[in-house]
Image 1 (tube, rainbow, N blue to C red):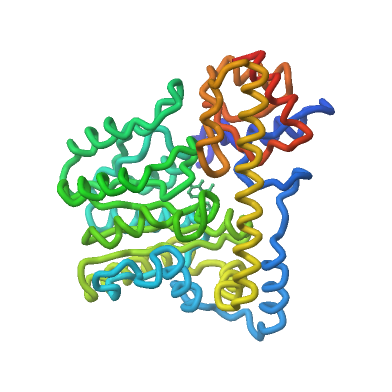
Image 2 (image 1 turned 90 degrees about the vertical axis):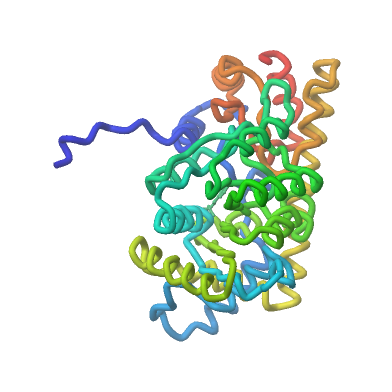
Amino acid sequence: MFQHLDRLSPDAILGLMAQFRADPATQKVDLGVGVFRDLNGNTPILECVRRAEQTVLKAQTTKSYVAAAGRAEFNDAVEELALGASRAAPGARRVRTAQTPGGCGALRVGAELIRAAAPKTTVHVSDPTWGNHISLLGSSGLKLERYPYYDARRRELRFDDMLAHLDRAAPGDVVLVHACCHNPTGADLSMSQWKRLTELLLHRQLTPFLDLAYQGFGSNLEDDAAGIRLVVESVPEALVAVSFSKNLGLYRERAGAIITVSETESRADAAQSHVLQIARSIYSMPPDHGAAIAACIFADPQLRRSWIEELGAMRDRIAGMRSLLASHLRATTKDGTFDFLERQRGMFSLLGVSSEAVEALRARHHIYMLGDSRMNLAGITPGNVAYVAEAIAAEQ
Ligand SMILES: Cc1ncc(COP(=O)(O)O)c(C=O)c1O
């Protein structure tokens, strides 16, 4: 059977990680893999997570199954975090949430739900988007199209082109939108743009699929969700994929959730019954440990305060490195070409240089970023920023 399988080329990000590890250079910089890093280059366990984990382990009396929907208290808190205390009214009872294995699990379950409800649906994803969106949504058999989102050369959003594309989409199509800290561009919609997008979704009868993977990495937990809350309270139906990999640093614990928003309470129950059936047929139940930790943090006012502080520190570190790199580049290139880095948000930006320049940065300077020039700003430190800025100025 396996003789029919050709060997696939390695995943671009995993391949780059392996190349970085194998590079013997003493001065090397990893701007590739999408994890937060502190000033020492470590991806730390948050203090609130350490404390919650102790509590969870002490209280645990069984390893018996939880449920296909995971922990009810986790789901409840996630709904409130993502959609706000009003749960994006009107008719808040039209919202249902199921815990999933990370944001990827949520995206995949969401895709399967769309396929179950309307197999001919086209899902429109941003150009560019996070590479895994294509595999997670595409492997469910749904048709994908790309809407223009960002011009990497000009380093600006293509919002009018985005609306023009979506204005031609068929009624019932789905639009995947990054909630904040767009991956890979770091370029987000302003509130007035969210408003115009919402009007278009309503007018063209398009269903939003909102990907919330970096809540708190842009401005704060509330403001980063303001765009998706506006959408959810305005449209009849929506999907939200939530991930706690980054904002709780729970990457390997796989904590996430899929939220469905339906027109009525009974439709919400029907949609949720499909979500649970889909989960059952793929992985049966989500892993418990990460969600138990997250639920403990959400419920305990002290742990929650500590989380908000630690999240703020991660956000400030990235924003600080954005400013520092932009100012070094301004000084080195004697122009403002790279000032955009300071204005964008979250871990990623597209440097906007050619693939040859990306290759030269890797081969000559041992600076690793993805082929489309996506860089993880959390890989920058005060110790390497001058080196990186000079290399970019030399190869741009
Ligand atoms: C845009 C986006 N969505 C979703 C995810 C899901 O992450 P995870 O499955 O690790 O929670 C990521 C992670 O990198 C992401 O960048």
